[in-house]
Structures are given as C-alpha cells and as structure tokens.
Image 1 (cartoon, one colour):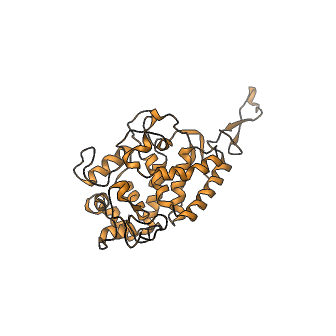
Image 2: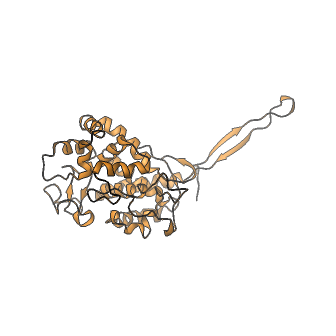
Image 3: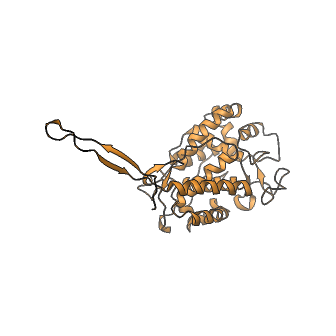
Length: 308
C-alpha cells in the first residue's frame, strides 16, 4: 500500500559500556493508510452526499459491512465485520443487503480515484461522513483496515438484524432478537439503543425490506427517488427525533418497526431511549462511541491506524 508522510519516527536511546550513551536509532512506525488519499476521499464523499442526499444508504452500507461480526467467529477474516466483503458475491446478494449495490456503485468512482484507500475504510468513512454531514456528532474514526478479496471469506447470511417476526434464530421478541444480533457483535443494551437512533435518517422501502409504505407525505417528493416510509419527518437531519417519534407513535405517516418499538417496550432498553428522547447531547455522545466501535468490529489493520 502506498505510504506518504503518514509514518512516524521515534528516537530510541540506549546505553553502551560504562554508561556511555549510544547514538540514537530511529524506529519507523508504518501508518496503516495513505493520509492524503483518505483526506481527499473524505472530501469527495462529502461533496457526493451534499449533491445527492445519499446519506441514509451510505450509513446502511457501512453498518451492513461491519454488522456481520461474530466475536466468537475465529481469526480474521472468518469472524466477519468491517472487511469490505459486502461488495462481493454472495454477500451483496443476502436478503438484508437488498438495494445496497446502489451504494457500492456510488463508491466505485471514489475508490478508483484513490486506490490506496481500502474498500473497508471507504465504506466506514462514507457511513461516518453521512452522519456528520446530516448534523450528527463528530466521529473519531480510524483508518487502515485490510480488505477481504476472496468470496469464500464473505460473511454468512443471517448475521444482520431483522425488523420483525419471524426472526431467523427463533427469538420470541424483538428485544431478544436485538440482543442476539448485537450481543454476538459484543455490543450492550446502551449501544443497541443508541445505534437504533440512526433511523432518524432514511426511509424503508417495501420492495427492499418488506416493511413500510410505498410513499408518505414526507417522502413522495424525494429528494432522490421518491417514496418509501421514513421514521422521522426531516429524514435527512441527524437528531433525536427518532426517539421522540417512536415514543409518541402519533403519526401514521412515520414508520415504527417492531424492533423500533422495542427500545421503549423493553424494560432494560427503555431508560436509554427515554434519556435520548429528552437529551440530544447525551444521544450524540453515546451514539458517537457506539458508531466508532461498530466501525472497527472485525477489522484487521495494515499497520498503525490513522485519523484524518
């Protein structure tokens, strides 16, 4: 992988005979990624989002790549996670990834322009930038992930969350299903609820997920392809409206999936959901930590991770 001044040099001193000081030697710590290309790719992603309003599908792309992680799945890359494998068949053909080829296609020109940026990094960067451009919290992302390139290393189907019954693993409730899926990744109740709040952005389309209305008053005019059903009225703004709207359930035009309702129905989830409905700053703080944690699940680093 091409490197620039993303490496750091550290002087190491030692002592020779009779306490004499040896000449310092320099240890080069290789950075995991090309910082210049990462910065330029980030700028291009920002421009793409501002011109196309593709925030929601880019968030979903990053999440669905990372969200296959199984903490008990073995050594990289068998455990899944943020490896870029979602672009490969058969993984992109999994039912939960319906419609995500469009997001991969949006990323391809940027990948071609910045070949030193891995797919795994590009997808996680796009997801983070999508949150930030929409007004969400600043995310302390790190880069330098290795890519999976062999289809045999794709994640198995069934590792991503479902919206409602029937749950493939046999969970009897949405809350049990959420804990099964996110617990397998190593995430706790607070992180599950915080991450659920990302539904403040985007729409569900019945032709992709089997959930939601064909269109509502909030989605009939786009932006982008009209239609689908959003969780919030301002579905391109990242805020805590999701928690307020799910709690009230007072607008039939807004979507509340069984797994959405669970954040208030479940006794252990509810305190976090109530807190986030009242305190947007608390939601942003917890979401930022959970998003970054999700983005690094299963990652193998090609050197020392870097931030841009």
